Image (cartoon, rainbow, N blue to C red):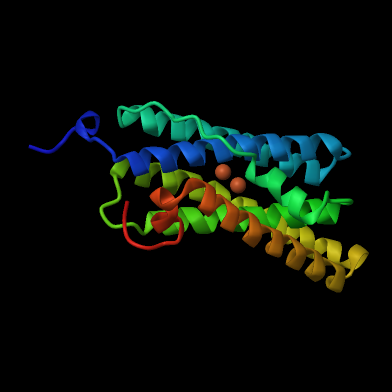
Length: 196
Ligand SMILES: [Fe+2]
Ligand SMILES: [Fe+2]
């Protein structure tokens, strides 16, 4: 007789990591929501609005997953990942820089979820949630990449490349800091080693 979902107990590491994702998705929704509000009406504002609606839904999916696993989310402290980017690399000053920071952040998120997806003995509830979310995250990377391509004619390829490099460096710095804050409990999975 197989286990029912409600019988499955997840580890403390799982619980911490899922709670961390849940909070990061809320921060993402707020971050992209603020950016969307600052933009004039048009296709980019439309896409960003769909984008922050997705991030908000993702947070709700993690809450649901935790509940299905018989857990309540943990409160995760620490500043929003995205705000730390801005601290490290400065406030974006135009629409291209806004999309640049968005692209780097989204690539970090999708990379992290992909690593987790490869974990051995992945719990089916976690797997189903990752599958659903990664589908949206692929669209996030895609629309921002496309929009940046279109902007090459206004901003120049070199300026865009430089901007992406600046945010990539900030991302690496913030990621390292996050690892040290959350310690070795999540480090093995964040670094893609082994299972939870
Ligand atoms: Fe998301
Ligand atoms: Fe996303």
